[in-house]
Amino acid sequence: MRDLGSMGESTFSLWCADAGLVANVSQIDKTGWDFFVEFPFKNNNDPCGVHNSALECKVQVKATDQNYRKLSIKLSNLRRLVTAQMPAFFVFLEFEGKSEPQSAYVVHVDNKLISKVLKRLHEVEQSDQENKFNKRKMTVHYCESNRLEALNGRCLERKIVEYVGSSMSEYVASKKKHLTSSGFEDGFAKMTLTAIGEENLEKLIDVSIGAEDFVEVSSIQAVKTRFGVESSSLFLDTLMGRLEMPNLKPFAEGVIKFKESKFSTSLGFDCRLYNSPFNSFSDKKLWKMRFESDFFGLSFNPFNGEATITFSFFEDKRFPIFEFRNAVKLLSNIYQNSSKTLGEFKAKELPPLKFTIGGVNRDFDYMREMKALDSATKLMSIFNVSEPVNASFIEMSRFSNEICGLEAFVSGSNENFGVELSMKRNDFHTDQLYACVVFFHAAVGSHYFCVFFVAKGHLKEVEGERFKLNTSDISIERKFISPVSDVIEKEELFSEMKKIEEKYEKDYCVITLT
Image (tube, rainbow, N blue to C red; front, side, top):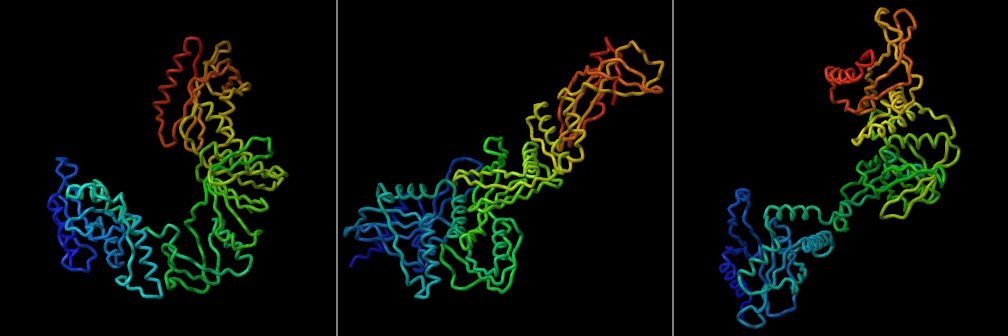
C-alpha cells in the first residue's frame, strides 16, 4: 500500500533542499505541523537591516491521490497553526496515483482562515456536545490561486515569501494583533440590566448618549462574547449597581446648523451624534438622540422633533474666536426670541435630521461678551490674521472694553478722539502742530492685537499744565498681533516708536506716549 504521507514529506524536504531552505522535521505527531522551515538571511549590504530576522515558518504537508481541492483537518492541529506567532502554511500535494506529485498548492494561514478557525474553536468550547478539539474537524479549501507554477523548491520559496512579505517582524506583529482582536469587532460582552420605572429608563437613555454620568440599576448580568457566540458562564452577576458609560463612540459625525427662519443666515458647528441603544426597547416618547459640539449638548426626540440644549463654555477653556462667537450668538438667539429656532444635522451616512428648539424670550445676560466676540472677529479680519486665535468666556468678559475700543478705533470710529498729557507750560506753544505717537493693545485670548498710531493736531490746556489734543486726524502706522506667550521687550517697542518719530519730526512737535 502506498505511503502518501512519507511521499509528501520526502518531496517537500527535497524541494526545500533544492531552494537552500532548512526543513526541520517534527518528531512528534501532535504538534500540528510537519516542518519548521528556516530561510537564509538576506544579503543586501544594508546596515539598516543587519538586525532583521530571517524568515521562518511552520508547514503542514498533506498528500493525496484525489483532486477534490479540499481536506478535513483536526481542529487541534489547526489551532496550533493559527495561534503560532510565526507564518504558517498548508502544502497540498496531489499525486493522482503516480510516484511524483502532479500539482501542488500552498495555502497561507491568513487572517481570514485564522478568524474562521478561532470562531469554530470558540463555538466548540461553548458547546454542550463533544468539545475535544482532536475529535472535531474543519475543512480547508484550496484553488487555482494557490497552485505552484512549477513543481520545484524555488517556486515554493517565492510563493511563501509572496505571502509573508519583506519583514518578518512586521508580519509577526500584524498576526499577533489580529489574533487578539478577531471576533471582538462588535464588542466583547453582552450585558443584561434592569432599570425599574420610567424615570430610571429615561436616565438610562441619557447615560447612553452622554447626557448623564450614571444611573442606578436594580440588577446587572454580563457574559463575554466573541464572534457573536456567548460564553457559557456569566462574568458579572450583581443586584443593585451603578452604570456608567465613559467611553461612548458617536453614531455619526457631521455639521449641525441653526436658523431663526427658513430665510435667515445659519450658524454652523461641527458635531457628533450619539444614538441610544435602548431606544428600540422603549416607548417612542422616551427616545433620544444627542448632538455634542465643543460648545453645547443637544438632546432631541427623533419622532416629535423636540429638543433641549445646554451650553458648556462658561469657564476658562479657550475656543476658536469665530466658532465661539457663533455659539454665543446662538445662545443669544434662543434667549431673546419667543419663536422656535430651526435645527438641521447633516452627515454623509444619514438623511438630514430636523428639529426645533423653543425660544425663551427673556433678557440676555451676556451682551458684554457677545459684543467683545463680535469685535474680536472684526479685528481678525482687519488685521488679516491667518493663524488660530482662541479665547475663553472669562477673557472676553474681562477685556471687553479694550477689545471693543480697539476695534472701534481701527475701524475708523475716532471722530472725537482725544489724548491728554502733562507738560510744562513753558514747553507749550498754541500755534504748534503736535504729533502724538501712541502704542495701544488689547488682549484677545491667546494673542495681543497691537497698533502704533499717530494723532495730529493742536494742544489745548484744560487745567494746570494738563493739555488735551482733540483730533480726527489719526494715522495708523503699524498693526500686528503677537502671542501672549511671546514677550515684547520695551527696547523693541521704543525702537519702533523712534522710527515713527523720525517720520514726523520735520513738520511736527513729536510727543511719544508709552
